[in-house]
Amino acid sequence: MRKLYTRSVLSEETAGLDPLKLFSLWFSEAKEEEEAEPNAMSLATVDKTGQPSVRIVLLKGLIRDEFQFFTNYDSDKGRDIAENHLVALNFFWPKLERQIRIEGKANRISNEESESYFAVRPRESQIGAHTSNQSSVVPSREFLEEKFAKLTKEWEGKEIPKPKNWGGYSVSPTKIEFWQGRVGRLHDRISFERLESGWKRSRLSP
Figure 1 (tube, rainbow, N blue to C red):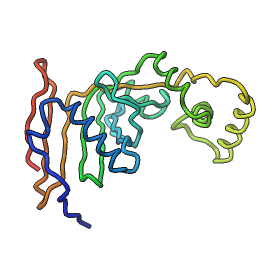
Figure 2 (tube, one colour):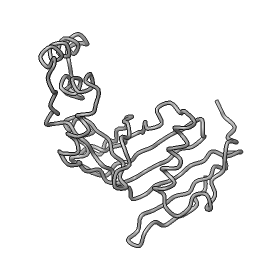
Figure 3 (cartoon, rainbow, N blue to C red):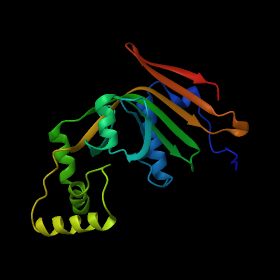
């Protein structure tokens, strides 16, 4: 299965010198194009044995020039990050024929920031965070549904607190690569690497 990429080009001029500005522009264009869940991103982590894992999470903001997402700290990805803070992210927007690869270091954000975000989540998502001991084995789907229903009844009419083991991470980028599909598989790839003096821009062979 192949697709002919003809949508756009990525030049040094259009890339500019600030990858975070370019990310914000591409992200806005992905939303305008109505890409399916434009904030969905692959998150790759590595456990203490060196085994890599990847899954989709949702970007919740580019805060202080860092990529922010939320999860259960006791999940597989939370345990991986506790052992090895180096992670990778990837966005893919097929309508625009684009992807963005990001490498960096993940750290927990403050508890205050996590509580602020948890407070504005849908109530069902708040209860779900308490229901799920993420990545742990459960006996059945019914087990989860019964626990969810029990907590829903317990917290009826009450404010739901953030679980202590739930919160946000921020990924501070050290490398960002922008990929634009082109004809003949001669794709445009422009990479930015963070140096002490700022960002170094390079064009990569496809």
